[in-house]
Image 1 (cartoon, rainbow, N blue to C red):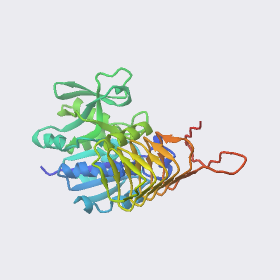
Image 2 (cartoon, helix red, strand yellow; image 1 turned 135 degrees about the vertical axis):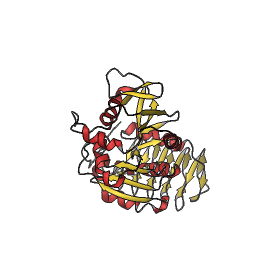
Image 3 (cartoon, rainbow, N blue to C red; image 1 turned 90 degrees about the vertical axis):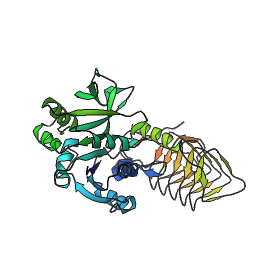
Image 4 (cartoon, rainbow, N blue to C red; image 1 turned 45 degrees about the vertical axis):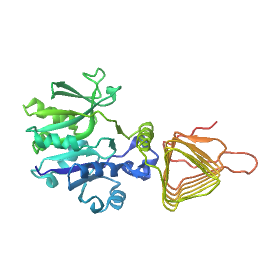
Length: 356
C-alpha cells in the first residue's frame, strides 16, 4: 500500500517560551538532535518517502534545518498553515498534497522510542479507516483519551475530568482519505480549532472502522520543560560512548559520554550519560548526568546537570550548580566580579529564573 507522511510542525510552542519566541519548538535539541529529526527518522524507518511538513511562522527556520529531505532519503513538501487552527485543519490544509492516498500523521514535537514501524505495518495489513496510537499514562486528564471495546475505538474525549480509561492519544495517526470528509463536517471547538479527536469521533459515529494500536515503550510530548528534560534523559540513557574530540590528561570521563568532533575538554569532569557537541569547549567545569551541550558552546568554571544548552551559548564562572534548565541559543550567563555585587538580567517574556 502506498502511504504518505504528514508531520505537523506549525505550533507556536507557548509552553516553552521564551525559547520559542525566536525558535521552532520542534528544533529544540534532545541529546543534540532536533526533536523533529526523530520524527523524520521514524517515518523513514517505517518505509515512508513522500512526506509533507505543515509549517507556520517558523517555516524559514524549519526549511533551513530539514532542506529537501534527501539526507533521510525522502522528498519533502512544505505546506503552509495560515494559523494554528487545529490538527484537523492541518489535514485539510494538506488536502492537495495527500490526494487520495492513505497517510500517517505525526506530531513533530513528539518522541516515540520504539518508532512507528509496527504501527504502520498494522495499518497496511488491516481494512480499517483509521488507526490511532495510544499509550497508558498516569495522568490521562492532560490528554485526548480513548474508550475501547476490544481493539475498536468507540469514544474519544479531549482532556476529560473523569477519563474513561488511561489510554492517551500519542500524536501519531493512520488515516484513509475519508478523514478529509470528516474534517470538513465538524465544527470548531471552544478553542476555535478543528480538533482531530472530533474528526475521528465523526468517523466512529458514522460507522467507519477506527482501531487502536497500544505502544508499550515510552513516548513524550515535549511541549513542556519538564517533559523535554525527561525526553533528553531517556534518549541519553541509550547513548553509545565515544570520543571524537580532544580530552586532556587532567580531565575525567565517567560513564557513557559522547564528545563530538572538534570539542575540547580541559581540566574538567564529565559524568554520563551526557553529550558534548562539536566545537564546544568545556574548561575547569563539571558536566553531570543527563546533560546535553549542543554545538559551539563554551562552559568555563561552572557545573551543569540534567540540563540542555543550545548552540553558541557561553556559561562562565557560575558559583552554584545549574540543573533542570533549558538554556537557549546565543545565551551568555556569567558571573561579574565587579563591586558592589549585583545581578544583571536581560530576559524575554515568560522567562523563569531561580536564584539561591
